[in-house]
Structure formats: structure tokens, C-alpha cells
Image 1: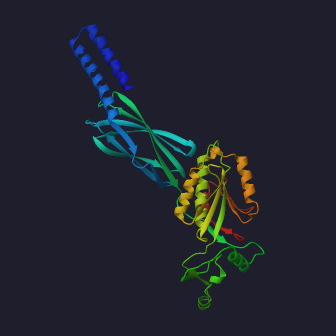
Image 2 (image 1 turned 30 degrees about the vertical axis):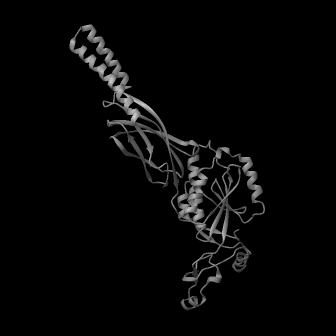
Image 3 (image 1 turned 90 degrees about the vertical axis):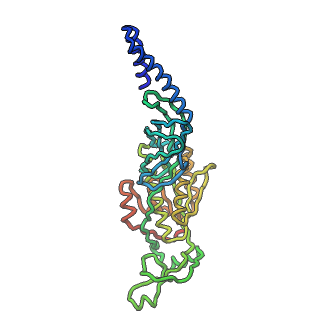
Length: 370
């Protein structure tokens, strides 16, 4: 717009100089023409020698934080660039919730860095792209665009917090019977005795420190250096995501928050969580073994990359029904935030109350987990 206005000014000066035959106006017209030519040369020179790229093509951040995105600016020319602009776009997976913004900065000769902030409001992958670079002359009257298409992927993970879980038995299944079944299903190996602590609901009765309990009139249990090798299976039903829903980003964010809290809560009681979901290149069963918080983040990153657009809901539902047949003791978590133990609903979570439900409530799980 400014270069067009400057061109109009040159034409008006030319008209006034010719109409009034006024020498200073003629001299001003010549100067304006010379600068117009120099302006074109400047912006062409700056466009040729100025480049920009992300310092880290991929990175990770925690939800709710402000991530400083650093870009490397390289000016290979002999002249400093007083002003240039960027068009930056941000979007979550499958181009959901995209928005754009313009940034302006300057650059000396050589290499330098510029930084802008990204607010990580939701869990998922934030695709950041610098679409083009616009260089200006020293008076910012003219400009030229340079298309870059530089991209960066930022993985946003939920805060590490665990659901408060208590393991119990179903009606008619006593604690001793449950422990015998657990010993038959799993291969328990414990390290050396390390310390004693107060008994908590769900602790195996065989670990009770009877001598210490009798002396103190309080139940104590022995802790060992190695936990039981007792994995839990968790099936994720992700077929309910509908990308046409206006608040799909919020729904996916709530699901990832709950999934992370559930896995971290289970890992406080078992050695591993075996997670299954429908997807992959061949649209079949995909699995992952999670043993710590790092594995949980890796799992979330894999789920972030699932292309929900390629899934057929009816085909996914049929797959879940067939695969879950005969697995009554299977934990299931749906994208609608429903948590099941087999066919029994443990709890229906809410997007609005999810923080309170994760941090304040205690959940009891009955039966023998697979």
C-alpha cells in the first residue's frame, strides 16, 4: 500500500512540476524517481540475502506454558536490514483451530536470532509454519515477499498428575482368593526388603509386617525394591472423534489429560500398562508398553499423530467388539471420557470438571485386572 501511495506521489509531483514549470518541483520529482529505483534495488537485494529457519524443527512443552520459539535469521549481504515481516500460522493436528499472525523485526549482517511466544493451551501437536518473509527498504515505503514454508512441530503434553486409585475385589471375591489368582496370572518377583510403611487399602496381605504391627497396634507392610511384574491392559476407543464438532480440540485435550492421569495412576500399583488402540497404516491393532512417565509421553506423541480422518467409525466399532470378546477384565477408555472395567462403567468424566475429578477424587477398581 505504501509503495502504491509513493508512486501516486511521484505522479502528482510530475504533474505539478510540468503544470507550473517550477524548478524545485522538477528537482523533487527527479529525486523521487531516483529513490524509487533505489528502493526496488534495496528490497531485491534484501530478499536475495535474507533467509530464516527454525532453530529447533521439533520440540516439546507442557500444557499451559508459554513456549519461546526461536528462529535463526541469516543476512549474507553487506547491508543491515532495518525491517522485515513474517507471516506465521499455528494449527493443531489435522489443521484444527488454525490462526495466523504477523511479526516484525530487523537484522544486522551475519546470523542472529529472533523469538516469539506460543501459548500451549491444549494438548496435541502444534504445527507452526512461517509462510513468507517480507523485506522493506529503509523508509518502509516498498516491500517484496519471499516464500519460505519453514515448519516446526511442538508436542504439548499434559501436566504429570495421577488418578488416585484403590484396588479392591468384586463381591464374592475375597482378598485371599484375589491374591492367589494374581500369583497364578503373574510372575511376582520382589527385590530385597527395603522399609516398612503403614497399610493402605489394596496392599497384599502377604506383605503385612506382623511383628511390627503387633508391637505398634497398627498395620504395617513391607516394601521391596522391585515391584510386581503385573501389567494392566488398557483399550483406547478413539472412534468417537468427529472433526466436524466445533469444540473438537477441547474434547481431544480432555481425553489426553485423562489418559495421562489414568496411566500414571495405574503405574503406582503395577509394573506396566499395555495400551491398545485402533489405527496405524494398515488400520489394525496398535499397542504400546508404558512403564514410566517418559513412555507415557511417547505414547501420547504417537496418538497425536493418529489421522482420525482415515478412520471409519463403523469399522472401528466392529473391530473393538471383536477384539474385546472374551476379555471381560479389560480396562477401556473412550474418547467420550467413559472409563470401563470390562462392561462395567467405573466413571463418566466431564470436560468442565476434569481437573477436580483428577486431583480430588478417589476411584476404586474391583476384580482381577489382566
